[in-house]
Length: 194
Image 1 (tube, one colour):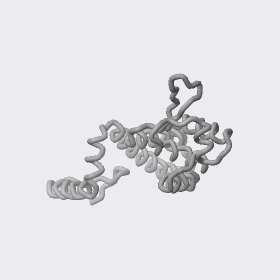
Image 2 (cartoon, helix red, strand yellow):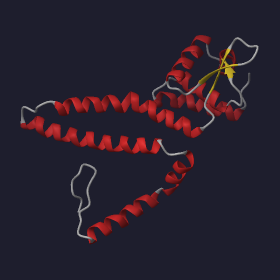
Image 3 (cartoon, one colour):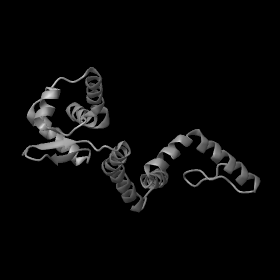
């Protein structure tokens, strides 16, 4: 199976980016191939298209299944397993966000909570614990926002993203109104801004 130049460029780039995203080059290439394919592919087709060993394909598929980024399919009258990436690009983004959160954010929040439960024994530890509390509050705020965004349907999500800088302008107006009304603006860690 010879890959068309556009597909080959995309696959090679995803392989290079794999290391930056926390997966190896082969996993990145397998995913890129499945993402662009107009039909499910079996392991032999992936091996041939990418010129990699069957064992590397098997390991890569297992990793992609663990990330919930590929689905196993069976075709009538064929005992082989076929694989395909989800069709909905927004579902792919949601899945990656969920999986990265489970692997990266949730363990950090657990560690921060554990430290915040400890009793500081010095002024240094009290200072450190206060900084940790600020970090914890910010991450909790961001993950709460991410949870809300995950619940949006695709159309609402696109509208939210299209707002772009309009959101900051809306917040500026809200803050001006709050200040004019005699209130104070609050920062992400709960402190007054002005």
